Length: 391
Image (cartoon, rainbow, N blue to C red):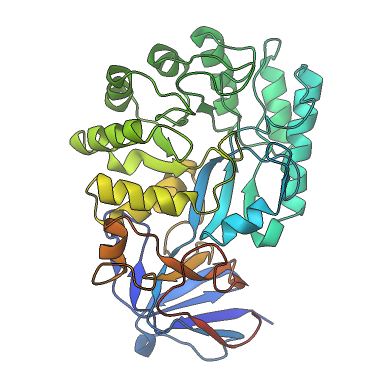
């Protein structure tokens, strides 16, 4: 029997698409975990729902995506000795996480055999175990000297689709990194580069020249993780890169705004994506993506409906994911939220553009309700309700 989710009485419908961030409609239907129809309830087939949700007039958006995390194993991070950080992140509206390298694994192997084994194991355990239903794209090896083209083929054949941050290993020159990134790309593996000053022992300065020479798919934490590059180098990267420009929570906020403003001037806002770069020395940020959306909207003067696209649709497009946008056939991954109680602003969008976080009332992943009222966001004015079916 097919599983059918119907969410009705949606007050505001965000699409994740910058070209049309707000959709007409008040209802969405998902069949077996995929979006099958959306629009106005009167025009849709809502019969036979196995799960019916009354949104009670709140906002529905595609689930948020954190483009830059450093997981280790399961829902535990030794970096901050913290359990259930992924579940906590779900309560911040994030339904998909993308690894930039499992670099906090104690005793992380740096020999070629060991690093390949760790990457494959990481990919497998997050494929087989999804904490609280969250999708964790992991198994992101950090490139080291001694790797050859066959190693990248082996990784791809085993299911690895990501490289960890270039520059966190022994490869710190653009020529070698460019060659290895080219091998990775040949076998369908996406790459990210560390940008800015050192973050952990063993990492080093990666400046604009190396970023440009290496040519990765994502300019990782362009606003530094933690230390940002000089302003002229950030501007140069925005001007020269066709890659994703990743702004992270655990970086330099001023550099984040410089990146945003430069990207806007260059008509490149579609390249802006968001990550937290956690767990890290700054801790774990369950509300990190929401905080970045509110910060960039308020201080960067970006309409909130566009700022939300930085945290879902833009990332989906840059990362080639089948989530993060309201589109038939895409995964039914949603966050339902409303203006926080007593927060200023006439509605949720104005409140976010004033710098306030919304209250998350529900998350849905693959058409299944995964969490109800968030334990981490401020309480919302209204809460969606599961009328029938599993909660």
